[in-house]
Length: 258
Image (cartoon, rainbow, N blue to C red; front, side):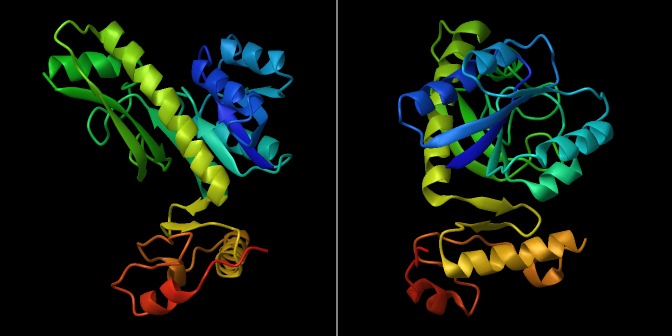
């Protein structure tokens, strides 16, 4: 089973969408924990109603939260962390150890950064006279909304739209897009190393070899320059960027499920 941890700070409507898709069999995954920095977040109640364990963050600073969550999350076997309306910065320990994605109610790289969340994004989009709003799913790194983009969906802005009506349309698109992204993650069993910019599928011998080596390097406290190249694997063919001599060889190797 593909195990997900969801971080949420508010009402948890996106969390509920994930839960519903798991319960109806559309998403073959398991939410093993819901984490919140807000003890009053209704997301926690949604989790409890579905018999999902919860954890409320005790610390306040990014550094302290990073240490706290590193200790807590090591109790779980986690394939992916999903930020679903979680407003805190993610610390370096979590970024180094886990694959983390975020869903953002705007078309990045525009309309991102600190303070750009919820209806505030839609206010900025309308004030700028944009033709489209939209949503983005991206990998999380050490800067707000700066990680590599995974998927985007545009939402047409109508003349009568207000920040609130646009936000409602964006939220609907955001939920649909996130579920589709999660389905793809589950299908490919992805893991992502942001520093090396490598995506691995974990279902074939070659990817698992790289994953094992990178894991050992991480445990040893080093991120070797040997793996610091800006490219990504294609899961079905192992195709590497054509700028690398190994590309034709890698592309010819079929996937080997084990």
